[in-house]
Image (cartoon, rainbow, N blue to C red; front, side):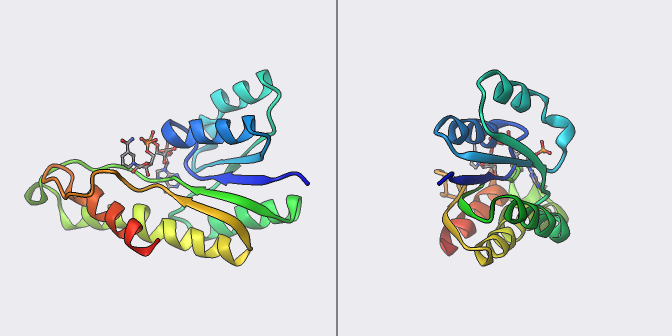
Length: 157
Ligand SMILES: NC(=O)c1ccc[n+]([C@@H]2O[C@H](COP(=O)([O-])OP(=O)(O)OC[C@H]3O[C@@H](n4cnc5c(N)ncnc54)[C@H](OP(=O)(O)O)[C@@H]3O)[C@@H](O)[C@H]2O)c1
């Protein structure tokens, strides 16, 4: 039976490479991103290598977007075997230089939104969940917000 993978935040970086890697391993891969105008490169590589990559809009900060995307996947494939919860962003700056609003926004995307997306997808019964975190969880002053958000992601896994 064909295995289905879903990756969030595939417009660049780790998400982009992970979606390609899963598709190369034979997974039917939903490469999700909040702005699908950034999908040219992954579509082009998918076509060139004859990979099963389907680009789908999914913004982890938007509950409706998550629900719509997951429902679409389940309607099309009836299963999700692997979810790579990658979408997120980094904020650099000493704690005294970062506003509370910026800190909240960081937690919203990297912690709350990501984990809510997982909960929604888990209800749809999936095989494995991989969440991105960070290897540097020592709260370096220069990236306090990012590391806290990553630490919290690690703490709930
Ligand atoms: N690279 C590192 O050394 C490192 C270290 C620690 C943790 N991480 C974490 O690993 C993940 C990937 O990092 P990366 O280096 O590959 O960064 P990246 O190239 O900036 O990729 C981040 C991806 O997340 C997407 N994204 C951001 N907010 C989103 C949202 N609300 N909904 C959906 N997608 C969203 C971005 O989309 P847009 O193009 O639309 O912005 C982009 O596709 C991030 O969560 C990052 O915090 C990375």
